[in-house]
Amino acid sequence: MSELTAKEIAEIILEIRKKLIRILAIIVSVWAISFTFLTDLIIEKVKEDLLPKGAHLIYQYPLEPLMLKLRISLYLGIAVAMPYVAYTVYRALKERTNLLDNVRISRTTVFKYLVVGAILFVCGVAYGYVIMLPLFMKFLYELAVQQGALAYYTISDFVGFVVLMLVVFGFVFEMPLIMCILVGNGIVKYETLQYYRRHLYVAFFVIGAAITPPDVFTQLMVAVPMVAFFEISMIVIRVLYGKG
Image (cartoon, rainbow, N blue to C red; front, top):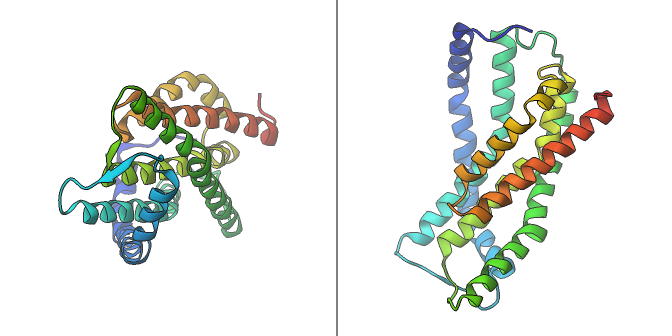
């Protein structure tokens, strides 16, 4: 398996750019549908289930409710578009380079990957919503009360944070599938993952710091599950492919 050349990288970018209109169309379509029919329900459900008893939500400026709905709709649009983005990148690599010459993925296999990926994403969202976030939000509220503070959250920060964390948890749960695809098709070697294990740990914490508010607890909420699922993925790979 050869390395990518600068010319091949440029061709891949060009190919993806051609598909960008479709990707944007998916994002905009989901954005419009969710903005019209779903975001209000999501906001009310999050407030009802995850707002600690005794805490209060406030608005800081007139456009805040509108901006919140726009942000949630955008998160949903990006999440729905990601499978097509991944497929587009795969097709570009397959057609424009010899990097994936040894990879043979049938339509049936792609369908299986999509089904498993959807199930894992839903499991990640459910894990975050039912287990992780209720405990975390309650912990933060009780910590504020112990310090003599009143818990007044802006609705944009509270609901936006919850939705972002749910999307992140959904993608974190995709890690076993992604790693199995990479190793199973010979794109990445198991030994390479072992060798760069510590480097990946650092990358996970960097990602956690980049996509979350600037506090340690929130960053750990993202980074620790990523580390855990990386190790789970390594175990799955050893079982399925007899590695290690």
